[in-house]
Length: 265
Length: 193
Image (cartoon, rainbow over all chains, first blue to last red; front, side, top):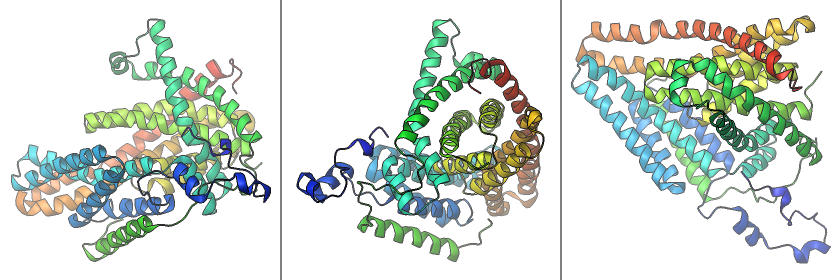
């Protein structure tokens, strides 16, 4: 999120004189690609949509298990601990759902429903976490441009990923300022007066985020964000073996969802 | 009056804020279903402030459509159903029509209604739960008896979705009024409008 491709010296125009100073493709790859083989953002986002559409729409239990397996494996390749946590949550949910079916008392049946859809949402959420950790914002923007998304999609998405850290920082600052004035924005006043406490937090947060947003706007316009021309990128966007594997897994999930059980949405 | 690059950056900033507030209050859902609805409700009301300020700064056709659609994309990234994107686009577009059609001097009267339409999208993430629970009850009906499963299923979905649609609309109206009020009280004085 912090790295900005336009700051890097190797964005020299492709003149022949600069050729000697340019690092080789391998060097660029080493700097801009993470060590783990990560598929192209376009593949990841397509599979994310497939998992979303199949798991939340198909009634077959086998589809949910398959998607869960895929999501946990993918997550494990980038963040092993997150992968195990997702697996544990899904196992707990599935266990509750099975218990609800085995001993149909009212309490267990109710917990079973909750467990059942906890397991399903874990599949989509785990893959979403994988997408968020594996895709780097700059690569995402470059690939959206390569996929010729319109300007009114690319510009807001570019800004959003730059804004989240700002929002977190400013929210922390507002909290500190409230504590200094003895307002203690803890959980207790929030439960007692949720709207008033929220307003006290959000109004200053909005003011400061919008002020820094205005500065961001000026900086981004100077850098040419939103220009009709397509900027070049230092990221080599190529499909690799990882894309083939993930793509085949996604296609397999579609086939599985179509062959087992009727889908409702 | 089309969206300029400046407006698109503004869309990004306000969508980030809108999503952050939605997400933080939806996190309360981990504490249980009832707390989840309370969290949704507080999030809807407080987001009225964000939307009111956004509309006052960018009263153009397409601004709320983009906010709704991109917020949907971010919701997919947090594990929600893909249906939130078309829902966000449609409700955002309707809200845009409410904002841009009519007398510009009476904009603040229309903001609560526009936001109420946008707030109704919060019912969409519940749809798979309703469908999914139905499938679950079909499989449990054999073991638990049809009558019991029917009663439970009816309680779970027959009234929850329409009721939440209505509640989110009303909360949207309240949030919109709160937003217009704080916009006058805080942001106009600070010169942010």
